[in-house]
Amino acid sequence: MKQNVSNNKNSIAFINQLLSAIESDIIPKTKAGIAKGNKLFGGALLRKNDFSVFLAATNDEITSPLLHGEINLLKQFYELPTSQRPETSELIFLSTHEPCSMCLSAITWAGFDNFYYFFTHHDSLASFSIPHDLDILQEVFTLSPGEYRQQNKYWTAYSIKDLIDEADIKYKASFEARVETITKSYADMSKHYHKHKANNGIPLN
Image (tube, rainbow, N blue to C red; front, side):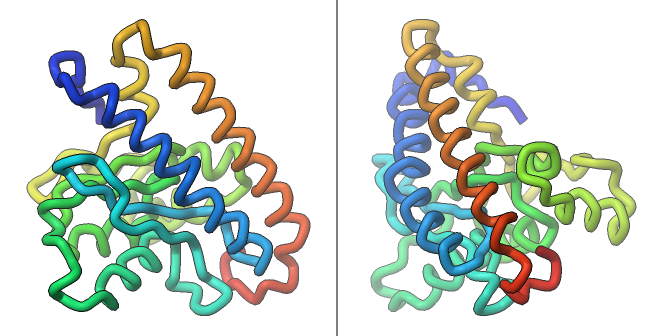
């Protein structure tokens, strides 16, 4: 789902913060998680008012196969005292990869009105050799690949790469260079994961 950001004076700052959250907050946690045998999916919560990162987390499926990056993020969020948690309506949900059906439902039940993703379901299959998101959508929900409703009464989903495509030309080259660096980081982490996944005990590895 594309979002027109051309008239948003904060759009460049917003894209910058989304990329920075992946680079500085999610990737370091993901590298540590992969070293333990986890997959490479992660997420972060950013405040809507200033785009600062409130919380970041990564996949922890070696603890439980339910602890996808988004689920682990929500788990840690709700473990905080109520007085320390913003309302979900005040937060931006960032996912490194387009959420699977379980994570889509969790984002919905938690009351978020948005999520932003970097890699698509098709990237998870083609670039990271992880087909389960698309397989489950098709086998369980009879949805053709990627055909869930990205805009509905609960939330709207946005592709970060689409935002970059629509950004001011002065900033696109810089953003695209960062996209390339992030993509390479995940390619390297994916190689490590698949090389060592045989004994991680994750049912759908």
